[in-house]
Length: 193
Image (cartoon, rainbow, N blue to C red; front, side, top):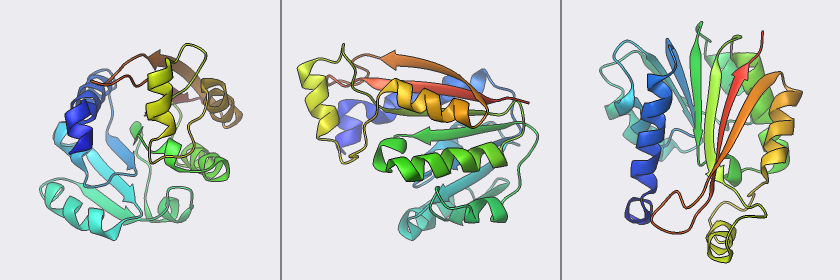
């Protein structure tokens, strides 16, 4: 309810729809998929791979993915277990929407390493997470610091990690992205070949 009231849900839908429209893909890997709401935005025929630690969320996700090619995996995204259970298609779009600020540095590094192993060259990962930098207002800083996710990072940390694992990275900071002061970091990382 809180995410809907501040505009987070509609913003994510808009962002994912734009990412999907600009990338010719045959599959999506949705890190921290929750109830698989991203699947509703995908064109028919695109394979959906949803990964989440919560069995409760994955149980709800099953009804969303019934009529499409899909696989739901109960796993920690930092674990390599999901790679062993899945297969990578030629062009994959990965999504990590509001996930990275919930995992510590070691888990984030393992997650990006997993993506580097899983994704084929030319595949992309897009992520959205709160960010604090020198232009963040006091109120936006307060909201980010009081989010349930305790690992809000600066843009340079993300850029370094992605580049370390062979990704070409584009970063954009979106100021006041919601109905409350809240800055988001938009990352689009392409697996180099």
